[in-house]
Each structure stands twice: as C-alpha cells, then as structure tokens.
Length: 476
Image (cartoon, rainbow, N blue to C red):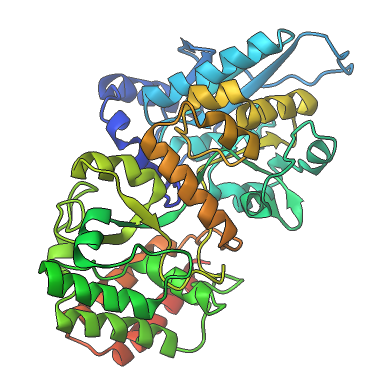
C-alpha cells in the first residue's frame, strides 16, 4: 500500500524510523496473525500477511482486538465509554506519538478510554476490510488519502458534517482547501490531521550571488527559465533538474486540466499539445545546459542524493515535498527558501496534500465521543505540541499561532510556506486509480526516451496516451 504524506510519500517521512523496526518480531507476528485469520475468517483472503498489535495509551498487547459488541442502551453523558482506534504505523515513533496524544486526551476526558491497535504495510487495509465485513470496525479509523474514496464507497465511514456544524469538531477559521480532501460526494468523511505541499527548494545564497531575485507567488515559467540561464552563466552550476510527473500534474492543473479523467479510465486531457509543450520546454533547457543531465537524475538514490542536496544546483524542484525540508537543510547545513512551482500565482496549479484523515466508523456506537477525540487530536494545542508536526504541519489558525514558540526555525519556514500555498491553491485532485502506479512507470520511461532524444515529444505524447489509456481502461 502506498501511504502518502503528499506522495506526499509517507515512506520518505518515516523511513528513518522504519529502519528501527524489529523485523524479527514482525515475522513472528505475521505468521501468528495469518494462522489466526485463516481459522477465524475462512471467507476472507488477505492480500498480504499482517503485523497486528493493540495498544492502550502506550501498552502493547499481543492479541487481536475483540469485536465491538452492540450496546442495547444509549450511554449517559458521563458514563464510562471505551473507544477503539486503528491506525497505520511503520515505526515505534509513530506508536509513541499516537499514545502520547491518547494519554493527554484521557487525562482531559477521564470517562473515555481509548484502546488503539495498529498495523504496518498492506496489512492495514486488509484488516480494515476484514473488520468491516465482520461488523467489528474500531470507532476511529485513520485513513490515507489514497483510500478514503474506497472506504466511503464501501460504507465504512460515517459523515462528520453534523459534528462540524455543532462544533464538536471545531473547524472555525480553517480554510476550505484544508477540508476539501475529506469531502466525498458533498459530505465530509475525514478530518485532515496535517498538511504537506509540493515545493521547489532554492538556495538563497546562490541566488543572491547570481543576482537572481527569490521567487514569489507570481513567479512565471519565463522568469524561471531566465533565472536558470543566469545561474548557469554566473555560477557555472545547474539551475535545476528536469521536471517530474508531479510538475506535469501541476502544469495540467494550471491549464484547467487533470492527469486522469473523472471516471479514471483514461487520461484527463484531450490536447496532446499540453504534453508536447511540457517536453519541448525541457529539451530547450537541456540543450542550453541549464538543467542537469537526465543520466545524473536517473541515478539519484535518495533524498540526500541528487544535484540540489549536493549543492550542484540552485533550485531543487525534483518532486520534493514540504516535509522534506528538514532533510534538505540538514544535508546542506543552511536555511533554504521554499517556493511554489512557477505559474502557480493564479491558484490553479498547487494544492494541499493531507497526510492522513481521521474518520468515524459507520458502525460506531459512540460517534459523539469519537468526534471529541478527533477534535482533540486535530485542534488541541497540547496535542499539537506533542506531535510536533510529525504527521504534517497543523493548519488550524489557533494552532499555527500557538505553535510558533515551540517550532524549530525550519518548521517556522515550512509553516509560512504552507500558508502561502493555502492562499494560492485549489482543490486536490482525486486519488490516483488502481492503475496509477503502472501509469507512473510508463510516464517515467517515456520521458527518459524523450530526454535521451530517442523519440520526439510528438511521438512521446502519442505513445503515452496509447499505453496509459490501455492500462487505465483495463484496470479501472
């Protein structure tokens, strides 16, 4: 399962913690869970072995959580209530962060107890599907952006609009763009727990040395090209790299188009000139030597690798996300600048990417209490300080103001950048379809053929449309 923080991608955000995961115990847990699942749910076929754990505010239990039992009487307001929560975790740090918020919530709400369970990898979605089929879903479900539409279609999640309206979940002052990702068919099913955004990093020292003005919200593609040339002429380094699929998606959004059509069974743009112009522009830059060679870029092996993090380029637009800022500044040992992609001043191209959502199971017997927990996790200042932007930057105005004293200098810069993006962005596109990863591979291979000059942009546009549409139509 591809879990994104903006595609962003959660793998990048948590990869350092994931290395610490104890693989030996994971294997044993996988085997144990697989055996139990085979015996208890003969009708279900899991796509992969799962690693199941249950935690209660820091305590890990070595057994599967019991199914929720229906309540015959509605609880009184202050009666003790136990809520179950499920979330994806690829590291112990994720578990610790989650448990810290649970402890704070239980201290503030002594009549509500939270029993949390977590799973790693594809086991998470598998477990959600099994629990939904057996009517044993936890009350609170953490949902990745790539899955929220799927969960809503299956009837797994409960609409949250009533709890927002009565301010049990208080989103007063929150910009609409921060809410849109969790709205499906006009109803809110998920509350975003943190934001990320695509970013074009830049080195302020290099730009100043070259006499290039730092890019602002109204930065244009023409000015970007001029600046790349100036940097090459004055500093004899690369201006930036070739653009990636993320750039093309924003490029299309700037033209009022999308990468996929609404049915997600074909590409979302009809005029191949959009693709051709995108490739021709980069070929021009490539021939001028103002961007790095494609061969260099294809050898990049991690976030610390590549022309920008190695100090060989002034701009870093290599499909980076705002949650990569700390890695970049640590690598380069200096404060960096953060800019939107060129051409984003009209607010069409850029978008906010939710890290995860919190939703309430449609089968929950305690939705009011579950809503209170979601409110606490999302909007409580103590909870936000405990999380310290681990799941993406907070976006509620009161949290942004309250977190300033506890933010690092890097976090302050990221927070300021995200506020700029918030003002110049539009609604995020729907999650990629099942065939999205295969379409991405096709795009990567064809762009390489273009930049190695094996095929023309015109030939590439036709080839990409033919191969992408075939895959999308087959795997819809």
